[in-house]
Length: 243
Image (cartoon, rainbow, N blue to C red):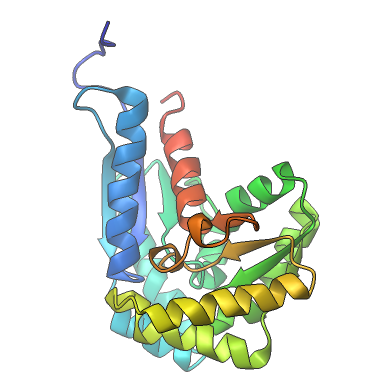
């Protein structure tokens, strides 16, 4: 028998800091509503507030290491989400957690860090070493490596310097435009294989567009941890909790 709810259905409002890129943001909106509908049933889905930034600004900040400027830019966007009544805030970009996490540390609104559901999934799988694909900032991040190690006992295996450059270029020049090329897929799978040879027991898709290019079906013998899917599930689980 279909579940009945009071109308309007009391829900937590999900605040999404998006636009980084529009491809990832669109996928978050779709996946969150699919996940919530699967739990709620019927015609119900999520109540979502979104502030979508100009990715051209983000690309400029990241490529030029202008992290203070990025923090100021995103602080104002987060304030918009809070004024709109967000009960939880999530950022759709692994890269921009570098500035969003410290912004949220001083705020009362709950924040779900994208690395945490990923680290929990790796730990549940019993793995201790994971390869990491992402932007240069993510793959080089000492803070991110420390978070995975200290919170979840996971050592990060990064690609070679040459492969980092290739992985980053494909993200910025192709994936954020949903330009999915077979030759780029081969490059990613080759980079993953190199990390596996270096001791990685699984691989983190540490950019929220990477799952558009490769997924678990491409690596049947190596566990794949998709930060987008794991983040979405954690956000939905929070939203489904008691109001």
